Image (cartoon, rainbow, N blue to C red; front, side, top):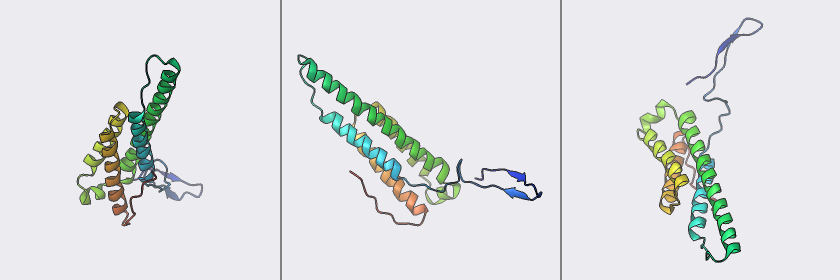
Length: 156
């Protein structure tokens, strides 16, 4: 897809502007989705590992609720960030020719985006791991489309 327009310069030559997306930076990498996905997985594990204190201990309960709400806020923010990063790859980087070699591309991204939503709504280690698996699969397809063999490395 070409986004741009033809216009006349002062010397009346036609100049064509081309870009593959809204900003022609040319910098794409699924690493930012991976990092956000790792944060989702980390917060999910922390939430499930947090012990709820007795209702009788007001200070401990306040600290628990504060920590749990912070973990939940971070998990949801990072899940949305992950979704945004994946959608940029899907809609801006991948082109029709990529579908020829990866006919399941749309389904792969759709499922990954749905997993981001599930991770926001739920506290599920299973879905957090499925999200990481989906991001790893996208990583492989992305770098394959660029003709590069980049090892999947996690920060955590």
